[in-house]
Length: 447
Image 1 (cartoon, rainbow, N blue to C red):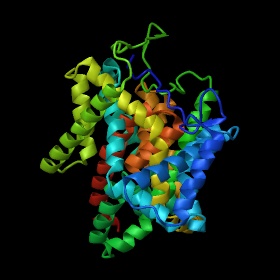
Image 2 (cartoon, helix red, strand yellow; image 1 turned 90 degrees about the horizontal axis):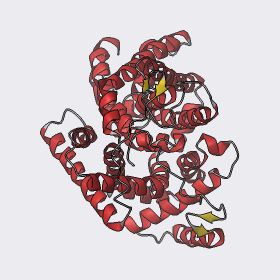
Image 3 (cartoon, one colour; image 1 turned 60 degrees about the vertical axis):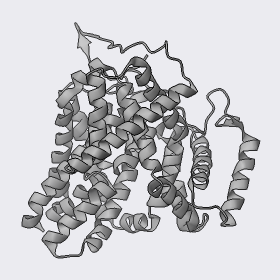
């Protein structure tokens, strides 16, 4: 059965649900033998920079870190495995435990070879097409209420706190709040640096060096915040606090109404189903690229979301094709999320920049405050429009504050709510674009 009420069983790849003596279905001794072979290849610097090397390095390291993180009591309920995947590779490269070639290899595999588009598109399309159509229609434009509330609150509170502690109101908005809430690095920080350069007279490169650490540190805080919300949601018995992956509260006569989607039990999981899902997802990716070329106002991911949502809302695709997209999505979330997280960490996170920013108490305090305020505001405004607090906070708050598409994956993995991906993509892309517009309007007057 395919609906938004259904919480996908996204078991960490490193853990076998029946026996913790296996990693990804492989006996632990055999898996560690695989790790040893891989490390020999890494330290000998003989791995070619191609798809095969990139995926095996990221997958094996990711599975191992997932397994380790999910063995640690308490920590495993706060996103243990995903957090280790996003932190340890970058830390080990910084310390010299892993060679720089690992970062180059995973970055090339993830970005240059386009694995990010391939995997993230599958998650977006599959998560939309597996939604409950009635639920999707009910959510509608109300999602923008908590999103706008998060943006406004972060700017106002962050700026005022920055002024009080001596960092400066405008400096806080432009160098902390703006970058964090701007939709990530490529779609946010880079164009933002060009906007600021035009108003300030500084070079775009110098500005980018100032704002990039906020994006990375903010993204890490988002992952911890998502894991914390997941843990709190599991422990809290308060009504309306957590929907366990369900965004919208639906009640009738005081009782919760189950909105059921179409029954896809007639279409069992199969290799052919995966093929169908992959074809559908990547075709919609091409549609997004075409529209983005013709109408470059928004990132192609926005058009991918719109295309997939239109197909779902108008019931264009037959049930077996939607089921194929759902199966492809399930495969990616179970097998490739650790690959994505390790690739981001090793190839994109500069740990020296992280350390530099952490040593500035004002900067790190404002970064933490920005994420917290955006998260709480999104949760509060979400309650007002009928959302669960946790799901609204993650979707409209943390989704705005993390590092775009890759950050969305890390956050949803830590919160165990991968089915919220379409809403985080709306936050990252449309919300990020909105932030760029706001900053471009005020930069000439405040910089």
